[in-house]
Image 1 (cartoon, rainbow, N blue to C red):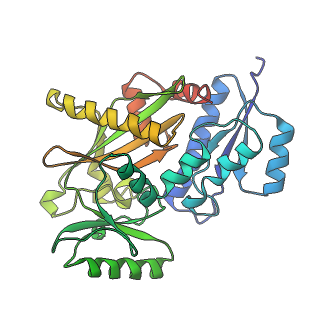
Image 2: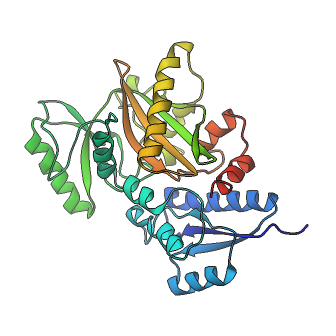
Image 3: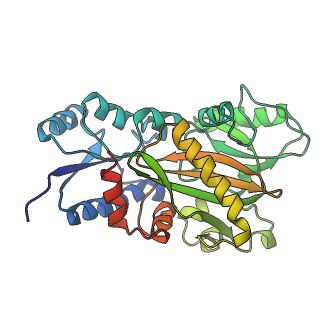
Length: 329
């Protein structure tokens, strides 16, 4: 069989001491490479940044049809993931997924929230060490890392109730210094967690079947219903065993899901998303939706990815998803 051409898969370096969330990219690489080969392409694999000069020269000499970009972090930092698409843009090499600017904006959760607010999209109020609103006594906030994905640094103790704004800023300042990274506090929305995945089709987003995170037995244990690190990665934990995603909804949810889809499409347009993306929502007790974050190039690991599960529910197997992604370049 004659190859349709070469498609390099670019992915972040994974150290021997990598955590489970970091190792997951290798599973994505294996699955994507297998799908591309089934589609008739020749595949090569390249760590980024690796030897940057060598990587650049290799890609220039290769003259690929496009690059499949699976870079989630650079030098262990999610905040630098935009460097991979930036390099490809500088080399005038086509690549999958969102453009560098969209990756840069959506990786910073606080910047994302500011842009959401500026275009009228509802997002929970937040506080950083330097800016934000004023909290009411005892109001719950959830402490998140500004740049981390995969629920890194998120756990049950991340939900806190503070006496005043000064107290929560002191907590953030202490965490920033201790961890050597930035945290922010977001008003905790008690309610449902629903994800909307989108797949590009001729430059426009197609909304895939929605997915809701279900928390079983959390309330009985006085636990907060949050998708934290243990629930995503620690297979022996109560959280992992009692948290799952469901694509089944009642007919009474029709209007809500329609609204979530419309908001997600607005996010796609405002942030210039491309290829594939996911928008994470919390829906409060009054049924009001709040955008938590926008995931450009979300995880597409078969079996573990909410995005892929939504695609399957929509009638697209993994190979079909990869085909759609590469033809959106």
